[in-house]
Length: 273
Image (cartoon, rainbow, N blue to C red; front, side):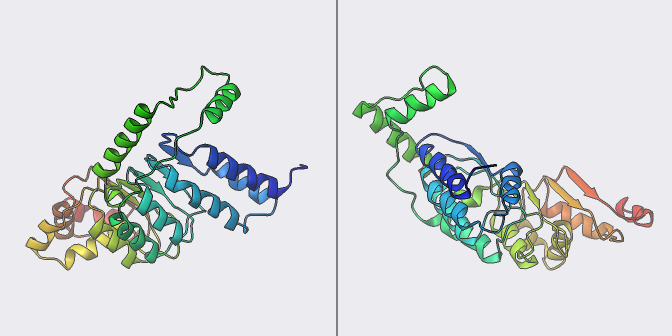
């Protein structure tokens, strides 16, 4: 109760700085953190936290799962697309991200990754090992080992260049500034997507149905998606016809899970009658 908010933000900044150079593959901004900010009435003062995360991300190029719900903005997506080529899953729900940010995330992927990597210092490793009461974490300052570290890191980044476009899971729940045009851009450009969570005025399911109705057979074949999961929660009265479902099947041949909330009268259409 006596902690000062400036000390709290400084602690987050210090932690993210310490983690630079480690092969961190999972970084989550948890709901607990937001509860703390809410408790101290600092929920609207996100600039310091955003700056700390944005400055740390370029030094954590091996992150595969990233949760920045409530925190992400367009500037942060530009940083992610530029420096996180290994990213596989991204959660930016309840954030201020816009269509522009989604385009920046994809466009930034073409920027060459950094060739220099921060290696944790021996003192940082010793202090973390002592704090965790754990066998000293491995680190070697030999120049040959350091050279191998850089070479392997470089290969990883080269093999995954265009990382943002290789995302398989994106969560955009309650992102009110993302429009249907932004979702269409994601579907057209993020070809590795297996799950896209979004529902504002229309669901991803509805957007796909409308998109399919605009395409011919050749265009559908050229835009085949890897989506495996689709969900439509509302409005309840949606009634896709069998022909629309056939088109959906053609553009999403890997679809294994369709959660469709609708009415009984729609069932004959789903059965293809």
